[in-house]
Each structure stands twice: as structure tokens, then as C-alpha cells.
Image (cartoon, rainbow, N blue to C red):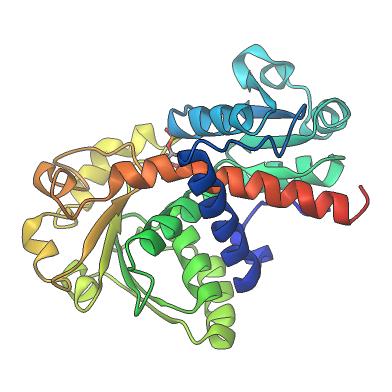
Length: 311
Ligand code: CP
Ligand code: NVA
């Protein structure tokens, strides 16, 4: 049975298949043909961190597919009182058809998946945010930006940077990452990406110079300087990230047709300027909407795989 814990477990063909399926379901939905591919199914959504997009997109997505979603936060489930992931997994997965989890450690998510009887989806961990990347890539495909693709990621070497590393190295495009010194991507994630990049012919460049990174790129992206769980480091990070804001001056150094992506929530005047965020090249709200469509594709794909595997 397939889970969706990281893009590293997925081939290029599978990633593109999920995105194509999401696009097909999006088209059908926009044409008023809403097929209930997951009729009568239940998705459990476990949140140990805050969310707007992930919660709304999964809940609405499951409803539109003919199913139902249950929201469980750690503060009002027994997880918050210390019930282990492996027990929660064995209980919840006997009652639902799919589980989405947003938590801190990738290892907690993996433990849940190990004990789960149903597919488990990563709704963000400290290490990866793979469902966001499905939506991001879908948006680039819709805008024809996937041809001759070069993505510049500016900012923190966090879960989004790691997810871009996985996507680029699997699909075989160019990714240039610029982080402040001391905020580089995790070495083991980078090593893994470089290994995949050899097979896919991806070009991966990591450095500390935003201007160098955006040169020749048709996509510029960034993320918050202080992720969930790093609230105490916020003040120090604001000092250390000086010079890393994506503003119009930086965008001008990218390719003329460059678009801007951000997983959101965005902090104006920090990782991105108001002007870039609100510019005509900013695709952020289409990107956010595509969370819904891409994840519908993912859920239908996982369900199909599960049936094929006879589970
Ligand atoms: N981009 C994203 O995952 O947003 P939320 O934290 O609002 O879910
Ligand atoms: N890096 C951010 C992404 C939020 C969607 C975080 O983990 O908080």
C-alpha cells in the first residue's frame, strides 16, 4: 500500500500522473461534472500544528469527492495527552479510509504510516511539505513554466526548500537555492537529492547569494523565515536573513517572464515585499487554490493504488 510521506518515494512518472489526475479532476469540477470518486469514504486529518490551506483544501476536497473528513487536533484528541502515534494509528486507521497528518517530526509520521491500515499523507512536517509541491508544480504546468524550468528558492533551508530539492531531483529541472549562512538545507536531504539528480539530469546549486540564485530562473519562490515551532528564533532570524527579501529589484535579476510562488502564509516586508506579492507575476492565490485540486488527484490516486494492491 502506498503512502505519501515524501516525494523521495515517488518516481517522476508517478508525480506527473498525480498532477495530471488532479488537472483532470479540476477540469471536470469546473465544468460542473463532479464525480464522487471517493463516495462514502472518510479522511481523518490530524493536526499538531496550525493550518488554513491544508485543512480547508483536504476537507473540501474530500467532500467534493463524495466523502467526508474528520478534523482532529492534538489539543483535543488523546494525542495531546500522550497517546502514542502507533496506538492512534491502529485505532484511527481501522475506522477511516485515509489519513492526513501535520506534525513536527518526519519520524512520527513514518511511525504512524508503519502502523496504519490505510494510506497516510504528509500534510507537513519539519522536514517536508510534499502536498504543497504538487500544487506548486501544477500551477507551473498550467502557466507553461514547466518547460526549461529553473526555480530559485530564496530563504530558509526548511521543509519547503527540502521539498523543492526532492521535486527538482526527481523531475530533472534546475533548482538554485540561496540561504543565509547557518540556515542551509539539511545535508542528508541534499545528498539524497544529488543522488536522484544524477539519474534525472537535474541541476542543483546551493549557495548564499540570492542575486546569483535568481539569474536565469523563470520561477522565484520563498517561504517564511521562522517556521511553525521556531517562534522563539524569530527575532534573531530577522537579523540573520537581512538581504534575503524577494523584492522587485531581485525579481528583475531573474528571467523577464519569471513568476513568483509562495506556499503562504506570507509575511510582507520580511521574506517578500508587498509589491512582489501583489504583482501580476505573482501566482500565489492560484497556487493556493491548486492545493485543493492537486490533493484531490492525490487522494484518488492513492485509493486506486490501494485497490490495485488488494488492500
Ligand atoms: N501552505 C500551507 O500549508 O498553508 P497552511 O499552513 O495554512 O495549511
Ligand atoms: N515552512 C513553513 C511552511 C508553512 C506552510 C512552516 O513549516 O511553518
